[in-house]
Length: 222
Ligand code: CA
Image (cartoon, rainbow, N blue to C red; front, side, top):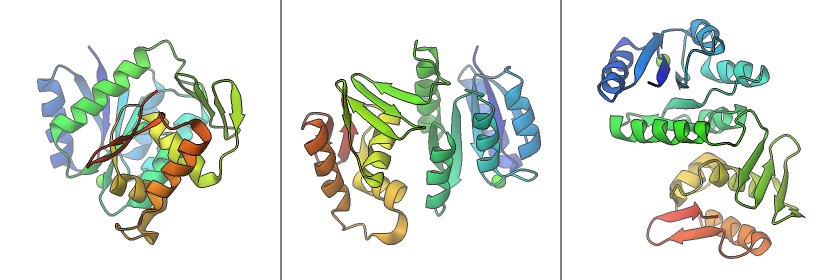
């Protein structure tokens, strides 16, 4: 049975999560502050961490930085409030695997948990700083990209976009999601900047890598 650590200081949400996850066959433990969450996450007793960012004691981003800084590979799904776009980016950059925006549905969260647990069981070493998706290798430390055995030069924004897509292969992102995650509030939802950058990446990696999901957005298909 997978054991999920829930770091959430709001009792109502923590108990909703606990009940919902238990009903779906997970074992759960709740930590209601950041210090306890970081401590428990180190113990190796858990398969995944659900992490609220606004925690007393230690902010969620600090918890992620600390765990990743010490090489703890535990998958982390962050809970964020909708306004905190920059927090989402910071959390992903610090090494969170995914995020869910509050208010969230239990179904969505459980689907995302299952995805992360599946990755964890795959042979790819989780502690690796290299994202491998098919013939694509993204070195997160060096910030270099290798595609079909060749190095590809990317700009900072191109790299960030590709990294985000590659962290969740097969997931469909709306333009708005991508805009929020990578460009934040600086751009109007009507902006075509996402399409422009997808175009740049396709020019460098070939047309087939980023699929257009008609009427929805984009996904990485390798
Ligand atoms: Ca909170």
